[in-house]
Image (cartoon, rainbow over all chains, first blue to last red; front, side, top):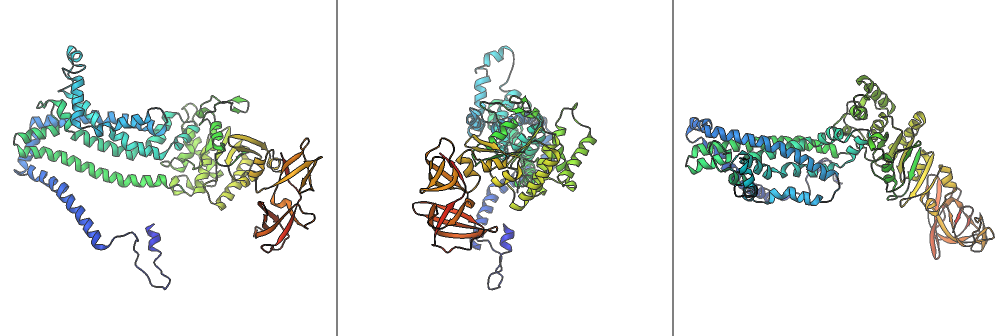
Length: 298
Length: 314
């Protein structure tokens, strides 16, 4: 479109008008809006981020690095990585399956399934955690049975994994459903008429078509899985060196007035967020090209 | 080569998808050369389907697209890599896109994509080739070229082909037989000449071109309009009020005392060497007359029209 506008300026009397969009605002309104947006961003996003790193480095590099080498911190890092390593692949498989079913097939209860997938977004994380305590806790629904067999879920790693899976449930499915719906089913149908089995068509046609969206979704899912606080806090029991994830570790340190260590560990999470953001932007950039190529039909 | 012709919503595409195995019939059977294929899954039906919007795999090159069906086969039935490459090369020659093997579909024009979709469907050596509105999304000139080219390929390969279209000219020009569908019903199947010369119903007649509808009376095997006999003969056993249908070129200007219809000229225009005149009739529908020899007629001039051909239906 911008090309068309730029090539139009020859007015009938032969003078050249500057290329200008009809929908643009007056300069001072534009500057005002930009200023408001930037101030807001600086105040609520950039400033806190700088504070995290400033506080973390308040007592120099030695204290900063010490916060990570300490055994409890090491254990928290390990646990967080473990939980993410289980929750993310699980939700990846579930999300792709659910999105595939919803986008490519018609069946009863489809709307219900979509609503259920959204549930973790609308429920407070604390409630999500409590659900598992009520189901698997010692006084919970399956409490006696689990106790009998000496299986501990609540206040142990399985509970943390469950809570994380629940909270990060919608990420992959939510991202893929609109993408797969937009792409429709004709390419899959084409593959089937050419003799491909359902699985072969999925692997060679569906999956490559959603790969960028999928990567993007996994990234967001991972960020949330590592950063989840509320639900995990309820089921973890805060046992140092055993059931503490990184966000919980930050809170404990903070409550002990160990600000440097607390902010140091927090800076790790903030760093993760920044890396996620950068990769996400790179993907969006790449992915936008892909989408454009897909929709350019004529 | 069979054309499925009908207005939009008449069930052409659905029928084509049922033949392919992408949709399922409530009743009836699909028979391929004597074999019942109704319950054969789409993968084993050996059909080549060309979709309206081509449905090329956009993340694959042209060569990968064409080879897809061969690569999708089980290892025991899959041709050697070199053999696949050779066949892809032959198909690219056939569709005259030899230099394009490594391009992606997004780098090609609509007509080129259509040809690749066709090559991809032909690569699996289908028993029947199914084309859904194959030229629907292309502009007029490309469409004409592709039509001729498709017919050439058909003549050369002898491939059984069924294509869907809502364009009568396309169906009549390209196919050996035409099946006219309307609202889910098959109205008539026949050669292009048959359906044009002997349409079985007013629906077929109207769909195949501009028609003029006139009230008439069948009497003793004759068809009368306004009490004057026409050259048409009434079908056996038909008498009383009937409907007469004629094409624009089956009307001629005539003196008032021999004319079947009267009216005033509303407008006249020339298209592709022929003169078309719209005539307003009092208390009846406007008719279009086509004449090759008439000079432009002044608007508002009174004219008489004689019917020289047409069809009669109850």
